Amino acid sequence: MHLSSSFSRHQDPADSAQRRQNLRLWVKACFRHTPVSQPACCNPAQGLKALTALGASRWKRPPSPVRYGVISALGALVLAGCGTPILRANFDTNSLGTHPGPELPGEPVGDSFYLSAPTSGSAVVVAAPEGLSGRSLRYRHSAPMAYSRFLGFGGKEVSASSQQYWAVWNAIPQLTPNVPLDVWIGDGHFGTMGKIRFLNSQVLVATDVNGTSFAPIGPFTNGRVHTVVMKVDKPSATYRISVLGGEPAVNTGTRAVLTPATLTSTRPYVYLWFGSDGVSASTYTVDNVLITEACPTDRGVGACD
Image (cartoon, rainbow, N blue to C red):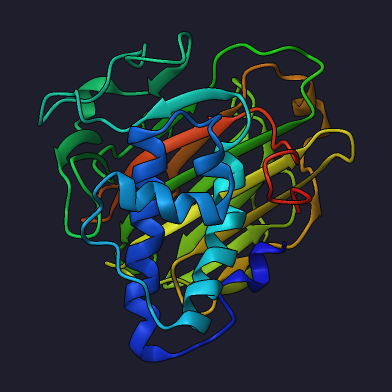
């Protein structure tokens, strides 16, 4: 199953909003109510039943052809939640107006949150805006100096024999013109495995290790919820990043890891960084951040790709 094609089928405009809503409900139900190792999160057919059992009253089934298009997309997405969880953050237990502490609450033990300038006010927990639920983390372009704008989510320590890293989250971008937001998966020292940039309604992929050269791969929409899915395959030294929720879905394709040395890391991180000096009204509101270690093929979903 290829993420790049999962949202390109059955492009009925009347159902696009419902497909996005169903996608968000699936992520939330799987994230909050079901252990990530359970088949309900890994098998699309069982997942539909699980949502009904959980009383997700807002779940609505579109017409049959569209429903199966949704299942295809969700099947690809939830692969990220089917391996060993090494980070989970949904901010619902954090106080409004604060930022998470260095140690994230709950399971798994050992995952972490990083903010390079904790007093800058650049990350605060807020009541979730429309499209998300519970509480979310709002990352703001409020720290003027480059070194004070790093935000990171770090997975717990894993074995060096780990084969893959997956990361997934929901977010609402609200970016002002000419203010880039860089998002990457890497090691605990800001090294880069794979990176994308949101800038001027375009998603771009980094094409060099220094992050100075980018190529456009598709659009994003300010104010619209999207889901980012990152996969790093260590044996092949490749990565793939997808942005789901728009029409069509955006995908980097399979690319060589930018810094191969980062593959020795046993603590993968996801980073956010506003790449413009000064401050602006730009925000990126995130929720349901999940990093996992592997994607098993024994739960009715077929190959991980």
